[in-house]
Amino acid sequence: MATITKYIIRDATNDLFYTEDHSKPLSDRWTPNFNNAHLFATLVDAETEIDLEEYINTSFFVQPVTIKQ
Image (cartoon, rainbow, N blue to C red; front, side, top):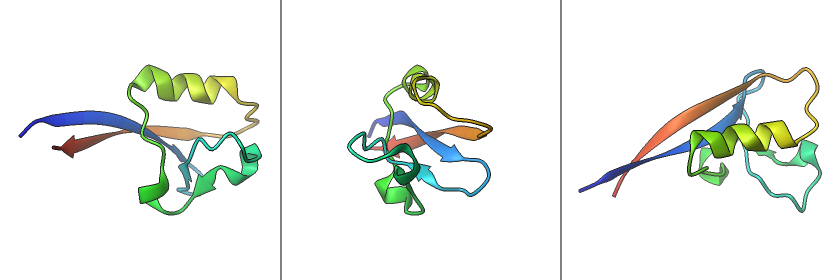
């Protein structure tokens, strides 16, 4: 069985996970449910998503998630 690594964005202040649903306002793109978190293919993709948005005074964790297939 192979393993792959994906990346999630988590808000460091409230532990909510980023969903990347661009049809919603930025403030509504967060969920407490890990299963709804968006899995980014690379660390660069996750960091780029953070850079593209208008975050003010927000801290994040970009965490690797290892998936066994």
